[in-house]
Amino acid sequence: MLAWVRSELQELSAYHLQAIDPHQIKLDANESPLDLPDHLKAKLQAVVGAIPAHRYPDGVYRDLKQAVADYSRVPLGWVSLGNGSDELIRSILIVAGVGQGEIVVAEPTFSMYGILAQSLGIRVNKIARHPDWSIDLEQAQGVMAQTNRGVLFVVHPNSPTGNLLTAGEISWLESVPESWLVVIDEAYYEFAQTSLVHKLPEHPNWIILRTFSKALRLAGYRVGYALAQPETIAYLEKVRLPYNLPVLSAQAALFALENHPELLADIPATIERREKIYAELQQLGLQVWPSRANFLYFRTGINASMDQLVLAKMAEAGILLRYTGGGLRLTIGTAAEMAQCMENLRAVLQALNL
Image 1: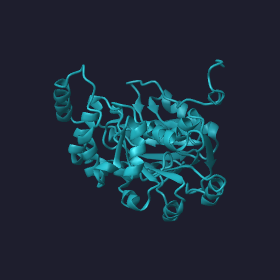
Image 2: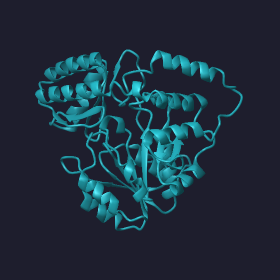
Image 3: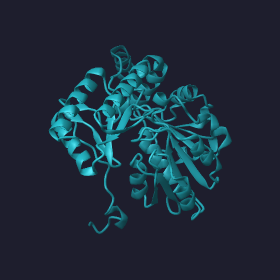
């Protein structure tokens, strides 16, 4: 280990990314399988091409913030923008965790909460989930009672398991003391069509995160946003890096919101394919869970080694899935991609005598 590196980073694992192979079907990152429409790309190219490259972006991003506020049905002052949700998670941890706080996450969930917390020297408390993937609230409450402040991360619907927060979990979140910050990640809001944004006025210690990377088709542009009461937003703005969104990303996000009915029109078809694949995975004898997002989570039901072997064999066949939390997550792609995926999965399971 290098002498000048903080000791706690020695055991930190980086977020695992696979090299992109254009010949593989990419079902491992929950992206939209559809690119931006050509007419929107042409419009974006024309606008960005006219912007002086030697000037910094307009770092206030007022037009984009207003568009996000309108889309989310909150006042303008309730919005902060990030270079993807990852930057916002990091900003939240800087504001609420560094030096004296800790975080609580229910595993399995999005791994970047823990990775970013560890990178900042913040303690990570991992709590369990029940077999239906609901949070062990008794354990969570016990852990949180041991300290007077921290950040609780929940996902609605959760990744990789696809389940929404239950009514009981939401009721519990509303009772969390204000010394704890509650972060509700709604990255898959457009697929689930359910949100807790309407409860933000009642909870000054809540932040809701969303992203342009999924249903709005802008994973390559890296834009996320946070919704919270103005005092909380002011702290996020204090630690936000100047000009954190490139001109191209900010303009693409603005166009995406201006054209969101067109971009979101494919969601019913995605949900229909998800339900079809869910039934097919069940027919194959796999352990699969219902989902309210654009992915499904399943296991062979044998052991983690077998799940990882299926992952490897599918990659050899040209289909990228993701192994996480002890199971396999499958993004719902186009009809053609899903047909190829299921054909290959059947062949892999047969070859492995499953």
